[in-house]
Length: 541
Image 1 (cartoon, rainbow, N blue to C red):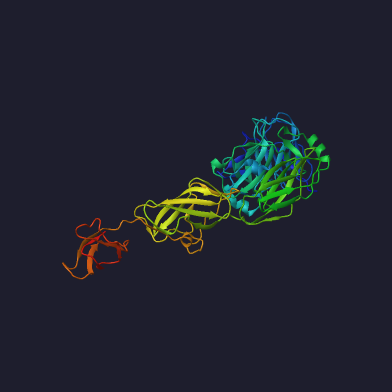
Image 2 (cartoon, one colour):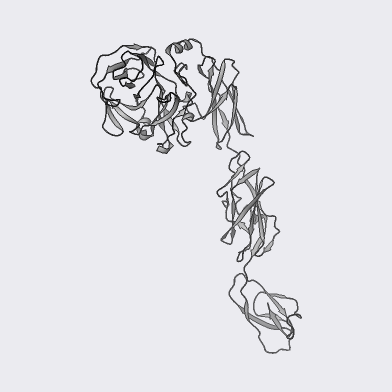
């Protein structure tokens, strides 16, 4: 079995960071300083080592053996930091994915954890008081991605806060201020140096650098820090003594069965379920895309063996689930992953057709044109959606009025003077907009607002034949007969008018010279001038 060896040196440093000579804001060299007498060292199991600190009034630097799996880890303790002599333990913790720290920290959704190291726990064997921060160095993982990540590297922590004695979680960015990449001249490797307390630490690579305003404040955690045997070592009540830890590890851990995972396509709900186990006190359930996913969804199942949640992702994907539980003795246990479940692409509510209740015909200024956008299923509206109409290349906006029968969006347009089109239609397939509001289905998912193509049989212009002519024609002038007198019962009359493309017919009335107001004959429709009329007098209107 591999063993860990810790080296402790008495170091002549003025302060906590006096042993670090920072050559740049982001990189420094770890100097060994002036070494004093070496103190007692005790190797324990693989991934764990402890050292006795009998003199608490010395500046101490504790370094893991260069050949151990904790190589590159060191802790600097300033004089007077410990209230009592104790043994200090440095040991491997659990993987980041076996904790709830990602959700506890509360980074914004677009900042993902792309990679993470296993946790490193720093704790005393006794519940002693820590009076000053520790200066901690953790090895930078020997992975290309980590080394190229630069400012995207950070530290997730869970520790006992010095002032409040609360167990808190948070994030320390490796920004050259709160944490720095330091070159260790002894191991000839890069490490990350920062200040912390008794707790557990994970080096992570993020998908992008968090902005200062995006770094969350420390949050109280109710989930204890557990070691590799999943035994609590630090809880919200404080540091757990080594005697209690050893006693708890003697009791066999509860073995959980493989959970089942099912998907309901109608409600689009995932349900994870596990066989009842009376010795289990509480559980969390992780829903992930794959076994390496560090950004999954974690739900509190409490004492239930079954938990469900509505899937928000609309694209096709797979999911797995597992239970992380605490037994009666306080030990953590993790189930195997469930079988993967395939989640199909979401069946979006869509637009089936665009029509109108208005009769086919020609409409003038002041007419209200109703337009109905029919959905495949129920929808709800917030804000003020709108529909862009096309009047022969001129945009007009139909206003939203109501949802009819749950699945029809009702719009109206009031015809204005000057409007003209031979077939009312919308501008294109993207003419329906939610504006500053939302158009949602019953599950709260945005409706697909794509309209039928203009040449589709389900478009407005295909289903209806509605024209608008609200253009006042230009008046005619220079009305007259082409001859001063005639004996023919039919004779030509002519007129002039301004060039107006909206005019296609003229109403011609004939009347007696003595009474043009009342004795006119029925109108004749003329398409052009001149036009043959029959009567002794004519009036053009």
